[in-house]
Image (cartoon, rainbow, N blue to C red):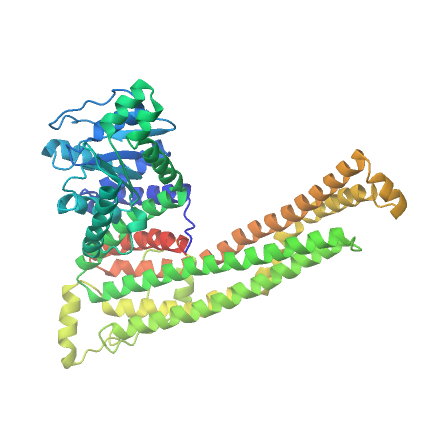
Length: 559
């Protein structure tokens, strides 16, 4: 399944999440998890290119390998950990980062972990002697895969290693990876870990000497080729997938924490209703966009075909097609909203069924609902209610006690849900034939002047080579004729694309407004019910609603 993530969309989602965290004392003081997300995204915004890091056991020869790749002594080397800071080196068209490694002193390793968050690809360097037995090293490598890093494993052979021994070592390493992978939730990953070997110290000497034969004997040529293929294979898709999973992982954790801190079952069920409605809105927008884009392709092909076939009165044909397309699309949207209205009705019924039965009998005034729905500044519902409206049977005192402890006015919640159910038919009725006429007139009419000019220009160009076959055959031999025909074809392509794409874009924006107006009316009504929650539950509900929106937005782009 191909991802639809783009870097800019992910950055926008990150910025929206950052604004929520900064706005919430509860989240900003919670832990350092968001700071990790922030480090990753702020670095990617500042440095969008592929970020490559060299990592491994501290004595495996990471810095020596970097020196071999650069071709000179740029990184400090030693038998004890010497890399205590982050250093960046240029290797061909790439920037390579050297960091402290596994088993380095604690302060060194902390630096490594901070930089690891930002890396897209890891060149994982090991000493092949004992690598199979060194489970900690392989565990560290597999941990990188769980963080969606791309890993290139390098055996830095400080001593001679025959081809036979190398193949045996690779197979043993593969076996060990297969044994350990399930405990990390990984499977079938051998193709994700290319392995290469070289003697980095000898390769550095060979590059300094300029001896091609010497360099080839060190394994460097094969290593460089495999590494380049590995780096080229890392696409923007891979990088964006990692960034998206970083956001989703944080959202999953923080949403789970917030949901667990809500003690009221009523509030939890309310939050589920908000989440479902938010999801339904995203799904409806996505489905509507798909319908419009499908109609866009159909419209493009028709317009192009009409031009090539010299259809009579093409201007009227295009205008009529736009109007019919709009009507079909709007009918599909209206049907979808009717279905969504029924879904919301069922969800509200389900939530009411979960609320402790209190035999609530409110005296309900529908004009109050309409006034509140129409007044965006309204902060509370006004209900006409007799003093005997709420009757509680003795066997329901336990439920009442719990409700009072939660500081929630149950009867107001019930009446608020009733308000939504009462308002739904009116909201769906508002999406009427009159609305379609207004939007259609506004959307289609803007193209009429453009269509007239475009048709005139295109048909005039066609007349250049629209003569009799004999003359046409002669003209086609001339360069001027070829160029005129090429221009005409391009005009047809441009006109067909311009009309269909602009129409689709404007319809999408118009329909999104219809969808958002429908859902916003419902969500605003639901949000008024938050006034009946305790302060903690109210803040949690508002926070969860905003987080659900980003979470669903990310999930929808993956499909």
